[in-house]
Amino acid sequence: MAAAVLVLLYIALRVGHGVTVRFSPGQSSGVSTDPARLPYDAVRSLLRMFAALVLSVTFTFVYAYAAAKSRRLERILIPALDILQSVPVLAFLTVAVSGFVALFPGSMLGLECAAVFAIFTSQAWNMTFGFYASLTSLPRELDELSRSFRFTRWMRFWKVELPSGMISLVWNGMMSFGGGWFFLVASEAISVNNQRYALPGVGSYAGAAIAAGDLGKVGWAIGTMAVLVIGVNFLFWRPLTAWAERFKNEQSEAAEVQRSLVLDLLRRTHWPALLGRLLRPVGRALSRAGRLLGVDDRPRAVGPVRRRTGDVLFALVAGGLILWGLADLIGYLSGSAGLGVFGEPLLLGLVTLARVVVLVAVATVVWVPIGVRIGLSPRLTRIAQPAVQVLASFPANFLFPLVVWLLLRTGVSINIGGILLMALGAQWYILFNTIAGAMAIPSDLREAMDNLGVRGWQRWRRLILPGIFPAYVTGGITASGGAWNASIVSEVVTFGATTLTATGLGAYIARATASGDFPHLLAGVAVMSLYVVALNRLLWRRLYRLAERRYSL
Image (cartoon, rainbow, N blue to C red):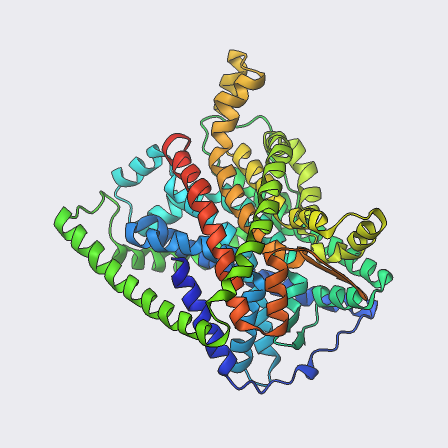
């Protein structure tokens, strides 16, 4: 599967590299750092973020549903998702810039599409993993309800499966939105193949201020980012998380529920009812069209001979295409840099792997207890959610000046300090998924534990750990992949004329991307994918199966 994704990336790179791009980098490389332009830049960045979120939600529904419903597709789509999560945003940018700029020559639309696509790649994978986990761990009683009432598959998705996974989807969407902020600088200020492209936005503003070493303007960018994050949280995410409480799977209502001033205001107006009436004909038409997908009365029975024949044909076709592309890729690398190009990234990958393991272990010990505490208390959720969202959404790039100053003053090597920068972008996946898992624990189970007097470690062992385990596994696998991705911007730290470079695979890929060295870029991405898939197969995938088998509510 890793070979298949690598072949696709190789084909896209070769095609994009060979296309004649008529766009002039000089048209957009200049970024104004006048603070008066920040409101306009903030709106541009916000529009890109929400466009990428819409694409991510659509991708999540289609991709996760296909993986959960088809045994053959699952064997390809889930390993591919592991690879896609590990491919750095900079690698996607290398493909996207060449492709979209060639698709819209001489137009800023090409760069806008490339930026939205790059933000999409930093949002979609976590949401897809979380929704896939919800689909595969659907409570048995809901599955039996759907089959007993002979829902169409369209009705089953919208009435059973989506509501069952709504809490996880909302919280993972909020975390993924924060991941988009993290890579905003890389998405709006693009340096590929020794050419620089830039778009108006908070990310490119911060990148220009950091490159100039202007701490005052970096402060303006940080303040603008804080306003954006808090505003989006208050107006969008907090109402959404409060609304998602209605989908909690429990038999008794919780004593405390999340509240949102914006949601309460909307419920008092006539707009939701008016919008519902306007969209009702569309919903009915889609429901009628959904009947074509069949009725969810029983699983389709397939004979063993027919199933085995289909598996063999599927494996032959998919394997043949992968081997053909892999042979062409090996020929390209042999003719340009030689197969020895994999040696250095393999060794550097061990260093980055050590940082990832340390990060995930420390983040688990620190954030799981905190996440459980927040998720089990609606009052704490209301208080902590804005703070956690601000912390999770702040791009590490904005903190580079402080980190460079701190490392130089203390004498700490960037090889150690890089772990902290990676944590700024990856640890929040564990916290957010733990909060979502704790919130999904039914109130009746918690009240039963209270009535029985179960406290302390016994409560954790019997209720909390089993209850949050599926969500934690989702957070762990996405945190691990996010840490690999964050290593690209965490192992090379620049502020003004000062650049600190760590030893690791992330720095290797960053250098190859900036110089347009496609053979070394492909080698670095391939090795990173190899490490991620190996870690997922040996650890996280086994935990996923355990969560499905023993700990689904």
